[in-house]
Length: 304
Image 1 (tube, rainbow, N blue to C red):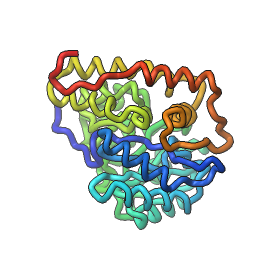
Image 2: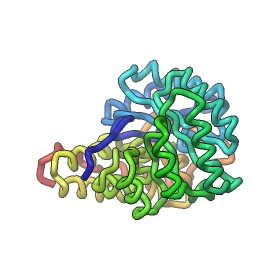
Image 3: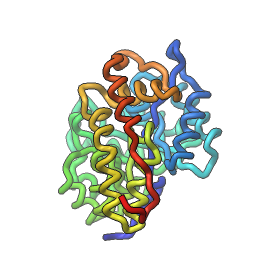
Image 4: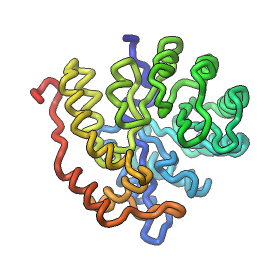
């Protein structure tokens, strides 16, 4: 296995964006949530991603969120700012704004809805990478965008000095391994069920939504693997699987289920913004029951 390259940390959380009961940006709540995540084992945070409701937050709110979280967690925790839109010009504007606000990197998703050809996908990422000094994490999630980043395109883009990482939600494990074998790109599992499998073949870590609720459990998977306790790592991945399924594989978006669980735990979250709708009481109760069932975190090397 190649030496790991983890430029933005190992256990990154795709953090929700807390709102007040009236629906405004909850800056204080965001600071408290970010602090809790870092204390729980997340060594990097992704802000303003789709889990953070980027389609319904304003450009000004995105800047304010980065500034607030940077102030809360300090300079040692990498902040990756979601800047992806369907418009290359707007994506460039958000990248420059994120850089000015204090982000360490930009998460750039494939332009969605328009379904550009691979040459256009490549040109989009290159234009964004050329526009600022921020390194880029490319976000490959064809199930949402309608267009994937083909492995051949990814391999070409890896030659750009500021394209350094990938959040992988491609569900193409073979294609991912091909890119890992041929480039120095730092791959991060973007699907929680793939945290351990992708890490086992050389990924840098994960960008986890479930970590909003259970940061220590997610961090524990990777720590156990690094310590050579693969049985414990597998056990921890299995133990969080029911929560992953409930939060990420239901008919509800992960943002909805995550905020429902955080609210039930009296943690900063607040409502979701339309067109999303809040989870119902039954769903929330099921999420809380899975959480309260407990996923014991053990030190690497302990018996499972």
